[in-house]
Length: 100
Image (cartoon, rainbow, N blue to C red; front, side, top):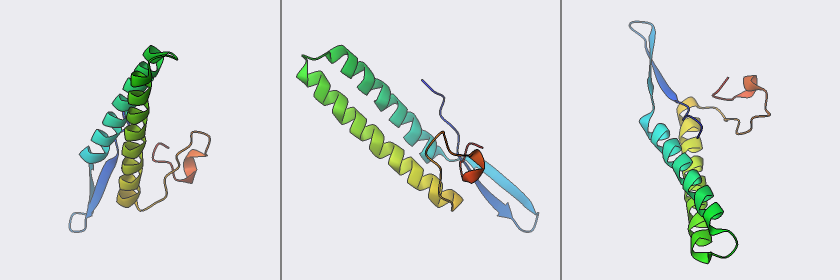
């Protein structure tokens, strides 16, 4: 399972001319839960094979929940940073990705 990237929320203190950054726990939790849901969905899908409709349906629900959490995390990161975030690994890191 990939490690959860940490999104930092930064604020400037004008009097001290410093920037304080701290991890955004909401985003971290959303990403952690989404990755867990994706892992569960993958296991359920694999274990279902082609015959276990109950596990296949549960896998679909878990994937939908993960997708919703990823969308919420993306929306929050964009609101924190004020920029459009790249959601592809093939985009030039200098083009708005939080990872580079």
